Length: 126
Picture: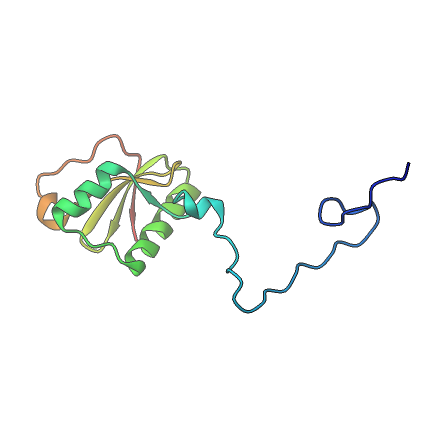
């Protein structure tokens, strides 16, 4: 009885160089999207369902540069050991759980009057 033929696609023999990835041909599908992107998880700031509702209800637009500044503010707060912070970006205050990198709520200038932020330990101007 002979041994089954070695299938290099399944196991690379010990000490053998790793085979090169096959080149994509014309008409082949693009590489798969990373699993984390499918789930909507990124290294940056995320928005809770409540925060998404507040943004929509109050008409607060969060574009690329605003999101980048918000993410930068959250990173700075994390670097100082903050747990929950208010990150001010232009005319909007974002209450963020720093450890989770999650925006809890957002308040624009029009709704900020007489608004009190509680249960925060830091404020960042981004």
